[in-house]
Image (cartoon, rainbow, N blue to C red; front, side):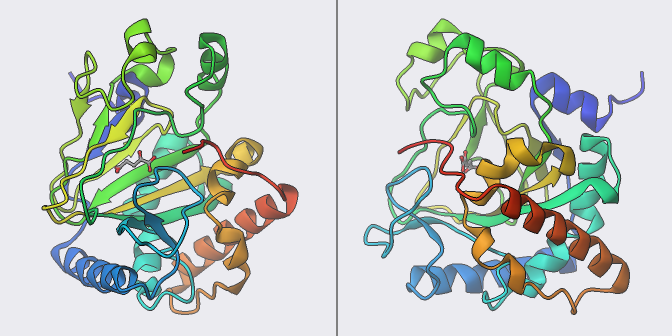
Length: 289
Ligand SMILES: O=C(O)CCC(=O)C(=O)O
């Protein structure tokens, strides 16, 4: 039997892991960039952070209780942004994305690239779907889940990472009664699975899969957390993407340091994000808390 395609696996389970997408030298330069970026953020010298103990944006600063993520890896003011930008627009990310979205370069929209890091103290995320509130009825869930995903979201681990917990298959059905009534921090939901990533592995996942994050404050975590969109989904994706604030700096991106082919791809993807921003001014936030 031939191996099922990436798309077949994503459709079936709601996530798919691709092992070892980085060459050793790419992994070490991304680790270096992630370490300097995290140090900058922990010192309070980068304001775009996910602050404890809040799960969803907007995140208040200063980070009096520490951080669990750093936002805006492609932001032109971030010292290491060139290293992250090379990676974000590379075939390692864009190749599987085109396969999963069944599209070409002409359809892609630049979206998010953030960094999830070891929290400064014990912290867990509640069970959630990224763009469907917990208050949604089963009909509302099904209505939203029935629409095409229009984005490929991924976690790329720079160190071994077992923080993401998902319920496989839950991206194509409403929550069960058990899931709906469970404690938001329930440790054992029937069928749950810990997504185990080795350094250099990437997991693509449907961001409306029922999932949560469980973190170990004593273990290094540096996982790039990003997404790439499909132009046909601009209206559906606008809130999910623009709530992270990239509208404020997207006009200042200059991709002059990329090779010609990648620069062309990046610039076109950036322009489609700018258009999305112009068409959707006050998007608000997907979830509260
Ligand atoms: O830590 C993770 O990998 C999951 C993050 C997540 O679920 C979120 O940001 O909504």
